[in-house]
Length: 77
Image (cartoon, rainbow, N blue to C red; front, top):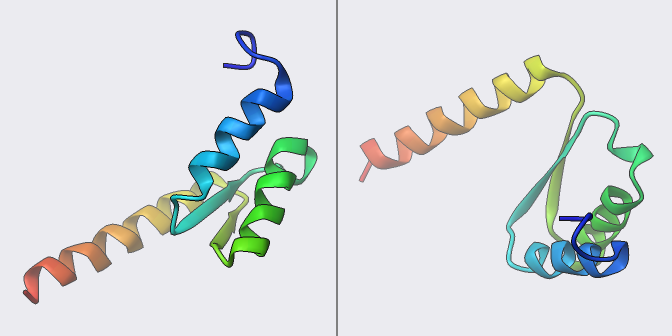
């Protein structure tokens, strides 16, 4: 995407999408990314929760936990 539009316009697309999110995942070395840092600041401003995930194993564990929680919700209906 960033090859097709200038950086700040691309970032505004991402922040516009973020306004519709319940949560954001911050992956890897997100602190080194200007865009991710801005998106995290926006989460703070809009009270959107976020989770920092540093390793592939943490991501796998998060996905597994989320899927289990979703399945429990479905089964308890």
